[in-house]
Length: 159
Length: 413
Image (cartoon, rainbow over all chains, first blue to last red; front, side, top):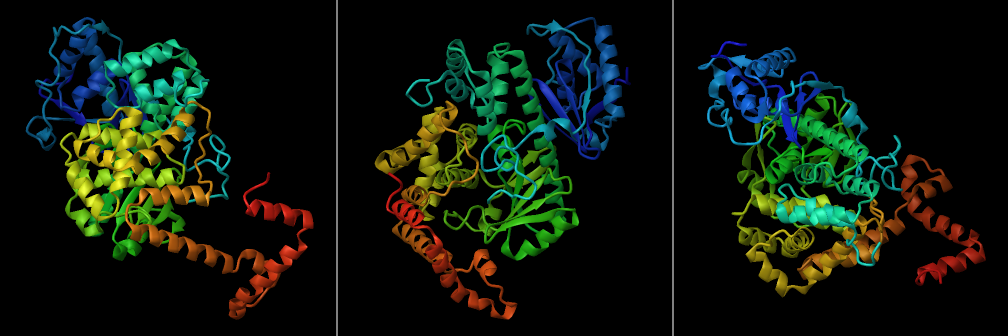
């Protein structure tokens, strides 16, 4: 586990958004996409509020059924992976990054009455550009016969 | 399929879930539609075309998890993940561009795209967008173009007086550099400086960006919806934009929006958008607008045209075509209906006539192929044109000429 005083926040070069319980993360510098689901989504949510490892574990304990040791190990592993991929940065309270509001209060405490799901180790999935390249924009990238016929290279859409 | 447009299970499901915050009543409507049996392939195609796939995805997951067959659910999930990825990339790029513009002291106003997704939907992944729209002052246009070029953007087409279209090196990010928010046929509530003075900060992709004020945003969305209705290229997502803004900003002073719109001759455009949002998505029509809609029958009359077309697209009985099919009579009648001031109507009609005449007289590529003239004599093509046209007419077979004449008189019988 990381030192209890150490907090985590999202790297400044990272943008992320959540849709249907899945966090999509983009490293703007490297152009790489990642995603997290289930416990990973909850851990990311805590990180966006500048949580420390213990607070992340508490948040997951409140939502998932699993031993503390199991969840601590999974969180430690996830934080290591997120740091290696430069998606998060660690900081000490009082440093410049500490300006972000801490997780206290906003992360549900262990023992919450909400229905808890079985804990599964969070997996950080990395993607290439594939999925957005598969997208065909129905307005700008189709020919006049309509979707899904791709506009040929030499024909630009009408304004 | 029933005879009433929009009364299929697919369109019912789409209309129930085409919103960021569906409630129990919407979920009940969706479940009733699901119970009737869904043509999933048609549904997926429709939500992708209408730009509301993420809204359906989120609400199905929230209220009807497991109802969609696995292969279709996987396709929808992949589509929405792709949309989220692209939107994040565009949001990051917008921040970078605005930062560069600021450093070079080029005032720039982002609109639609990430700004709209965050301000109306509160989530970058819920609104599909494919490009970035940035408004700059006329006097900064050249510098703004240079800045984009310095980042590797290449200029594509240009719509005179309106926008320059740029594409980045990867071909995936497009930026429309605007001189105006919409063409001069549509009302502009205020000039750049007034819009600039009213900008509001909002957080996009972790950075603070200044976008149009909510009031200006509301007017802009209504204008863009009407513009696309006129071209018959409207999509449900545009109606959702208005409905989501109404829902996200309950304190929005619609009296002021309407008053500014009225001054610009665009009140009916705002009323039409609100009517459509209320009618199709059950959006609550602001009190200030309700009375005005009731006293202006033209709003509902225009609204019903768009409503029927959208409902037919949702139930699969009308193909969505992204590019405008020019139908001068239909388009002009709709456009004139949206304008409330005689002066605006007269200006349109005058432009229309002048453009038609100019189009008839202006030499074309065919004229240039007919006879090759050196550059200094190009003016002579104005004389060549009537000769070339007369020759083509004479060459037409009598049968073809009869058919052409019949078409001109009202179409083949």
